[in-house]
Length: 257
Ligand code: KIV
Image (cartoon, rainbow, N blue to C red):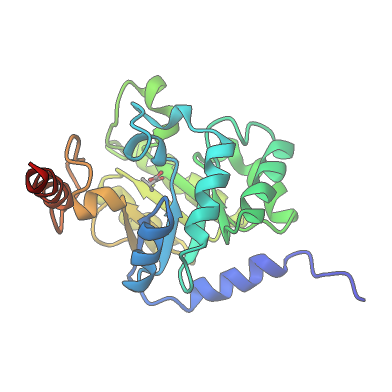
């Protein structure tokens, strides 16, 4: 039997991404029903985000999320998906070296992901290159990096100065040249996000980064109003699931009295 082409998965996924409509929609999902509902709604990309730590596990931020948790959530999300491309987040400290990136990237792929996502720019090029060489499709993430929220002292808008905008553009180009297939732009000023989208031949996926990215991504709980205790300023809530659930639960309780 011939040896498998080492970039088979990456080129197949690249072709699937190229065939997506623009703009396309991406959303996070963390379990079977949320993933299946998103897939049935025709959402093109599903991210098993490490935001699972916040909106599912009630943590303060994403810095406590582990590889074991990400593998579990990736597995149960993939069980609900028939069409969408599933991207899984590499959690903090799971990609500190190129070797760790490859090992943990393979674990998320074995759990069913089509691609893995890491946060950061020029400092991650060697990790991206190592994963691409190992045929692990990679998605980048620039702008506000939630895994660095503690060092940053909060969730801050990025690309506010010309220097920051230029650095973001350089990082995006370097990530694309290293082989990432898409780049999430989080909380980047639209005026700084637009030139990145214009410069790249791969899609940008915006969250709080203006309307002109190639795609948009939102957190599942923000879209359906399932996490009413904190809603980011850029989130639009399309229904109020938490209120409906509260009402259903108190009706259930009342009927028993
Ligand atoms: O973990 C996550 O939900 C994300 C999105 C905010 C893009 O990375």
